Image 1: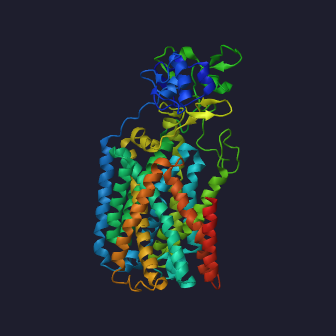
Image 2: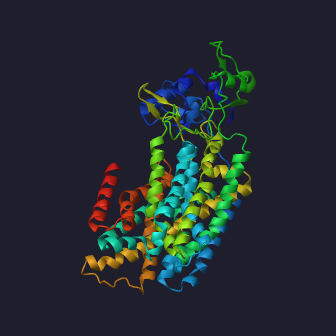
Length: 598
């Protein structure tokens, strides 16, 4: 992706080349946090030995100090995108509220949909829980910031989990006749383990819900021009309202509707972009005046000329590409050899992305955490309990796992396409100047600042509006489907498995504090503080976590239950005599190891 500059290259000096690439906060005032460093550089740039601040009008720090053109502003999204998404949300909410007439006040209808869901509903609702904004936005964002497998490991891990659940647990969970997953533990290990499992799974789902609120909030914030925090709270309120009204009937049947709209829109956009984008990944950098090409192929691609200081080397053709300061085709030289959509040995060769770090161990760990941690997911197992038969639960999990691969993995390919438009070689690239290179004792211009909203901007600016809007609706629908499932699961487990057992541990509390008559109302009431807590977590991680809150919170959510709950869960069905003491020790030691290693 090239940029047209207006005078930037006239200031590309030896100083800029030594420093590299970066961005500063402002063209006026402070470009460095350290006042002495700022004053020293300001005096050089301003050619004034008394200067203490930068004072070049109409510029920016990354251009003033590093010779890199200021990042171009992305046009705001058309109002139609926001209208379309809000209309879709309103429609889903109405459908959710309508289901209140189906549950008829029965807790079994609220929690497990009367154990009546057929295969097509089970498949759709399981896949909808798997294919959420954590998986889709997290996948596209991580593959944009890093590379293909860094994003693809999310849907791969989630899909594997559903298939493993189909093989090992789904039929047993369905036949057990439980109302919640902690009930399964209660039958084998007793009330103490039941409460411990409840706490672990609720903690896990606080993070899962928070990650989805971040994804949904990011879309609404950008499209409606409201603060990210405000969008997160609005998302939480909307999803909470129809979830507590209709319970699992609301969740299941809105999931089917959201799946029909969401999957098709997301897949259509993904395969359209993969098939029609001219550049599937950033091409070799065209460079800038005095830029030296790394090989003959790149030299020929851009009609390079002999370098002034070394005639045997090939350099940027200034006469052709930059005839004047206001007519330059340049980029930042970020990809001397070009990028690729996917490095096929990234998951087997730690040096496959040299000179960039390859998180091969982290990616394999992510797949493992999601594949096994999700086996203790409250929403997955609630749908297995709600299936008409054990066979439906088993087949539904297997099909949903395959659907997760088909819908989710193509989004990882969109990361490289997004880098074409919003990556370090694009006209919209921003860089951090004030990143000290201790070895040289100089600031460096090498820290690219990925745009948190890059993929959303790609959907609203770089693809046909209809497809971009459809995909945004699909991601929001996917996010809503998991948010409602998480809210329902936490409210159900806390009211049924924790509050009902308080009397057993604390004699001063009535044992019938929660009973069949008020269980439904209590579950709805308890869902309020959990939704608020997740919104608070989402508001914090939206703005602070460098890895991207969606993908990070998804991994944390199932890392928690992998460490504490999964082993005793297998013991429920595959140990001849499940031991309460063994389950207690497994949970405690898992939690301790998880906390220590964090």
